[in-house]
Length: 73
Image (tube, rainbow, N blue to C red; front, side, top):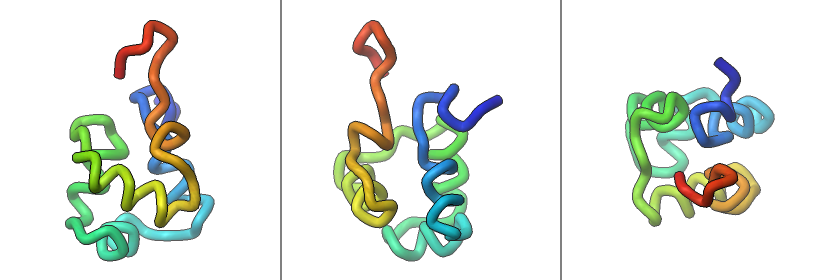
């Protein structure tokens, strides 16, 4: 299943930044498992975590977590 099919681009952008899940977790203040769950779409991050992820990955929250065509997450 492509990374963006579950509703976010965290994995894609993390890999582009050449960060491991653990490194990204440390950078944003969460566990590696939280990053795994976020990448899979099993966990919806708080607004604050989404902002930290976007900043760390050099993007915006809207780019990182795009809405589907119906405007729903």
